Amino acid sequence: MYSKSWPLAESVLLCIILLASISVLSLLNHTSADKVYDLVDEAIKEYSTLVRNDHRSSLNIFLQRPGKYDKKYASFDEKLRLQMLNLTREMFYFGYDNYMKYAFPKDELNPIDCTGRGPDFDNP
Image (cartoon, rainbow, N blue to C red; front, side, top):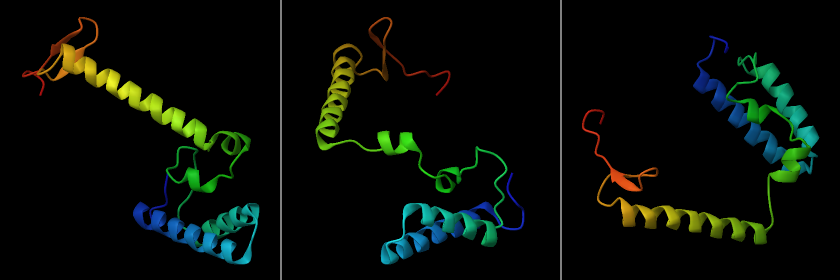
């Protein structure tokens, strides 16, 4: 639950401004990432009226330190990126080509009957 003294939008804006300011300071001073996270935590606790009571907070992503899985799986090399891009393109064309072959001009492809269906006039 959030504190009622500020609207949520103002609290979010404050957190974004704090993060941007601290990020710029860290770049200028060559401060380590852990130090930046400590500064963010201190600034939010001191200046923000946003109260973090549960893990479902929409700002939770900004308030956590990256863990070992974030460091391991958050990025990938160019070869894997191109491979995933190609697979995504193949999946899109597979769906699009089958829609054009079996369902066009209907609204969607019914995968069980392999026919088109729609429009649903009873539930638009």
